[in-house]
Image (cartoon, rainbow, N blue to C red):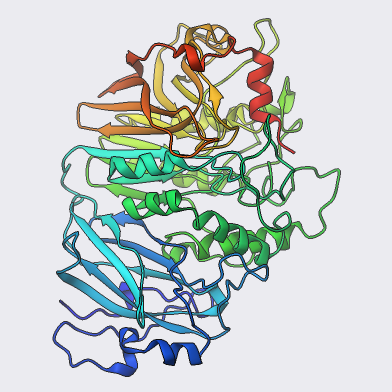
Length: 563
C-alpha cells in the first residue's frame, strides 16, 4: 500500500478551496495512536462530545475516472437536529478511511486519515487516485470503535479502452413525503456500474404543503428550507432512509441538481415567483449549494464559493461513453412567460439560454473533441419538443427546453456539426417515463432523427401513479417523435455496448406502501449510428393498475401542480 500525498484526498473542514490533511499512514509504517482515529477509545471520544455512532447517514462514492473516485460520509449523531449540526460538537474529528480490493474488506489497498470539521457539517470527501482501472473497490470509514457501512465503487476503463458493457442507471425526483424509496432499494439490487441522479434529490417544502390524493405517507421535518440549518436537516432526513443509503453504497453516483434542491422552478438569481419577492433568495441559494456539496460525493472542483458552484462537468468512461453533466438552473434566463405550458413568443428569442453562454461553449467544445462511442447528456428537464395542442398553436412547457428553443437548436446543431457518433440525452423532472427521437426541426415531422432522449420517472414523487396504454396518450399523437409514456414510479437501467444502448424502463407499482417489487414496463434500443429509439419490448397493461387513458390536462397537472 503506497503512501498518499495531498492530491489524493480533500478535507472539506477547512476554508473553501483549501485542501489539507492529516498525513495518511503507509501500509508498513509504525502506527501512531495520536494520528490513527481507530485507536481512540469510546471514553476518549465521549469526553470530546462524540458519544454514539456518527455514521447514521451512510456512505457514498462518486465521479469516477480510470484511476479513482470520491468517497464520502458525514458524521451525524442526531441527524434530525433542528440546528443543522446533527448533534455534533463544534470541533473537528479525524476520520480513518480505507479502500479494499475485496468485498469482504480484508485486503486494504489504500488508507489514510482525513478531518471531518464543523465548518462543512462534519462531511468528508476523499479523492482517490492511482487505483487500477475498470474494476470494483470497496471502502468504509472509522472513528474510534465506530465503523461505517461498507460501500462499493468502481473505476472507469482506461481512456484508450472500451472496457466491457457499461451498466448505467439514472433516476430523479424523490419526494420523501409521497412514497417510500423502494425504487432506490431495487436499483441497489441491480448492482449497476454507475448511477446518475438528475435532480430533485430532495424537496424544500414543509409538511402538508405538497400533498398527493389520499394524503402523504411520510412527513418532512422542519420548516421550508431557507437556511443552512434547514437544508442540512432536510438532507439528513433523506439520507437516513435505508433504501437511499443502499443505493448510494451500491455504486458511484454522478449528481446534478434541478430546482427543488433550492426552490421550485428557480432560474439563476430569480426565485419561482418574482412577483412575490424573496429578499433572502441569494442567501438561500448560497445555503442550499453549501449543504448540497456537504452531502454529495463531489470533487473539490465543486466546492461552492458564495452563491456560485461549479456543477457541470465531464466524466469519461473509457472510449465507451462520455457523460456531459449539465446545470440547467444556475445560469438560465428566467422563464419567458411563467413556468407552465404557454404559447410564448419569448421562447424562440435567440438571445435566451437555458445553459448560459459559458456552459454552452464548454458543451460544444466537448462535442468537437469527443472520441467516445456514446456522448450522453445528463441533465434535468425535457429536451424534445412537447406541444400539448393539436391545433396551430404551439403550447409547451416554459420551464423545459421548449422555453429556450434557440438554445436547444444551437446545441443540437453543435453535435451534428461535430459529427458526434451517438448523442443521447437523459432527463428527469416530469415524474413519468418517456422515450423520444430528437429532431433539429420539430416543425417537420418527416425530417431525420438526430438523437435520442430517455426520460426517467420519479422515485416517489406523485405517489403510486397508474399504468395505461402508452399508445393512447395524446402527446404521442400530437408529437410523433415521442414514442413512449408511463406514469408509474421507478428508474431506467441501461446497458451500454459498442453496437447499441439498451434501456429498460423499470416500474415499482406501489411506493405508498413499503417493499414493492419491480418489473420492466418497456425496453428501447438505440443502435450505433442510428439516431432514435426503437421499442423491443412492451409489457401488457396490468388491469389491476390501469387508469383511464391519460389526457393532456392530467399530464400537465401531474407535472406542474406544485406549490
